[in-house]
Amino acid sequence: MWYNTKASEILGIQYPIMQGPFGGGLSSVELVATVSNAGGLGGYGAYTMSPQEIYALDQQLKAATDKPYNINLWVSDTDAVNGTVSAEQYQKVTQLFKPYFDEAGIPLPPQPAPFRSRFENQVEVILSIKPKVFSFMFGIPTADILEQCRRLGIKTVGAATTLDEAIALENAGVDMIIASGFESGGHRPSFLAPAEQSTTGTFVLLQLIREKVKLPIIAAGGIATGRGIAAALTLGADAAQIGTAFLACDESGALPIHREMLFSDAAKYTMLSRAFTGRLGRGITTRIAKDLIGKENQILPFPLQTTFMSSLRKASLEQQKHDMILFWGGQIAPVLRHKKAAALMQSLIEETTSLTGTYTR
Image (cartoon, rainbow, N blue to C red; front, side):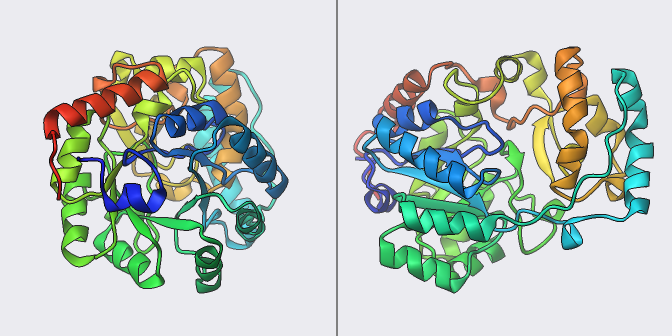
């Protein structure tokens, strides 16, 4: 059957369907458990969490499901040199964004405090709690970390936006590779070249990696239906990772207005922008993102830009100024139909089965 792939075997799941591990509070224990209990692989984005919070999260996940699940971290979680910026850089960004803060009737925030990377401390917890799957993006963990994962039986999954990144991941010894196409919602996890130069579509990227890499590949980006899964499998994927369709479900951690926007006409229009976080990411098109095209060099590095924008986001939500808020979403959003994760999983399985039958590779 179509679901008997290398990926489902390695991950210990029934169906090679993975839920995108959303960061920044957009994941939820309920969503992860729903997907895993239905035979897929639920995923939780933990890059903003402290080691203590990750440990508590794992306890909740273990209580909610006895099936495999994925915890995701960012190898590189800051672009700021020494975690900070100069007063001159901060002054430039305040001039650029002052009109929007004025429109919202709130003061400009103070210069963000220096940011210290959390990845090393977070990984220590991963090695302690031993989830079935540890996925990562924005780079490759050290050889020592990957060796410890192998010794502990933790399956490792890295994200690639280019063929070069996929080859680097294979050479590092990961278990599986996500082919992350530029159709995807959320941040572009590029790490060898600038994200703007790493914008290959999912199905092209999948075929390029399939030609050169022997590891199982997970297709991600622009997939929200069984038809998309069947297409990915036909082109050589061993699994599909689905983000936007699960983000739009009631069980996700997204705000109600965010989920509502993903089902609205506005979701037909998405764009890549650095304006809200400092890293390139795809969301529903906003006035701010359009205004700042070509001015990316005046934006603070990640994650200081996120901190800088937090009060504007809060005020814009309260005032319902939705054209000043970034709502993450992929290009596939206009085809979304399901608001319940269990119904979405059932639809994905049934549609893929109807299209592939007993198809095997």
